[in-house]
Amino acid sequence: MQNLAVKRNELKYYISNIEYFNLVGKLEQILKADGYSTPREGYFIRSLYFDSHDDECLYEKQSGDMFRAKYRMRIYDTNTDTVKFEIKNKANNQIFKETATISRESAYKIIDGDYGELLTYNNPILNKIFKKFTEKQYKPKVIIDYTRDAFMFDFFNLRITFDKNLHSCNTDFNIFSDNLHTIPCILEGKQILEIKYDTALPEFIHRTLQIDAAERMAISKYTLGRRFFKVEQWEDN
Image (spheres, rainbow, N blue to C red):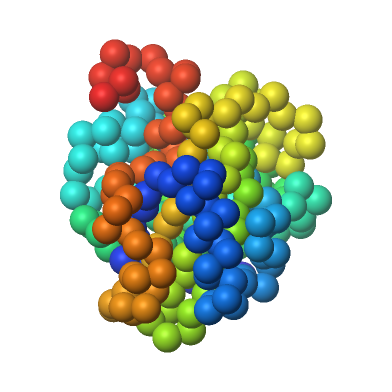
């Protein structure tokens, strides 16, 4: 069992498809691609988000709470034997992720509501998730699929990612399924640019991205995935 804690700044922007191809062409000249990523092809990511019976996480995001958290399982291959279980904490622009690894069999049990399975690992992160899930009646809410292009710069622990073709499903929570019926989350022909770094964004990266011309947004893939399945009027905000 391996736990991982990562804290960094995170900036997000919507960009057009043309801007995406332009930026990838520039970045592949000055940065190295993520080891799992081929520029313009990327790699698959699937996340299953959990929320409370009264949509606590969704409401905190929509309300713009400075301190909030999301809970998700994440895989990169439907045939995988392991699953990342993650708490993504946000405090203003700072992101702090707490990640533990569980087995495929445990993931199935937890998705079915057997939260006691979390305690079998005797893991502090999973124990925290157990407490939250049982106190607030958390359950699976939506699966988000997308493809990610990623570039890295070792100094400043910098990662620049392009998340493309977001799709969601809220009718089937089998995270390992190859036959999910998903629908697009973004209908405007845009992709998501994310810039993640520890302390400072290098000036040459800032100039290359020309992010001053882009509109920074508080983008949440979870919220985008729920946008077509809203149950309350406030979810339109």
